[in-house]
Image (tube, rainbow, N blue to C red; front, top):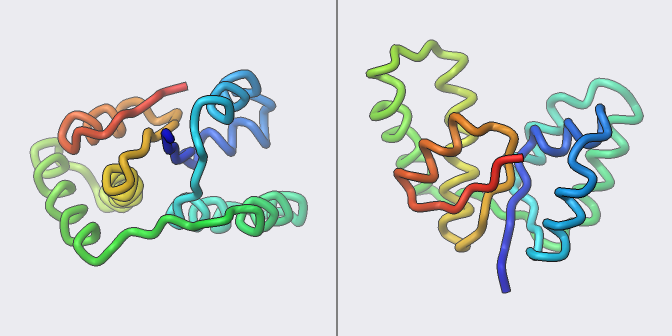
Length: 137
């Protein structure tokens, strides 16, 4: 059984712009999709209309399992941000966004899952360092 976690940008592109229909169909045929609590949180945070909130709440309700970062993932995410962000002189906002990406990647690694994302730059870095499979759409 192959697992996958779908990143926030894929859901937003699908819901708001009708993108990734074929990709998501392929993902559903190839993988068992699990929801990252980090992705659900990002989606909920950004859901500013009643329709958007219904979509996010429906996704959360339909998820049989939420994959959650463990204590050590938070610690390792901080290390990754220092290691990658310091040489690039990242500001606070970039570090905060990257922390969520790191938590998603660390959770996926623990479960042996592929991350499906639109965020090529950050997840390619994380994929190399953490040995996580990343599929960019």
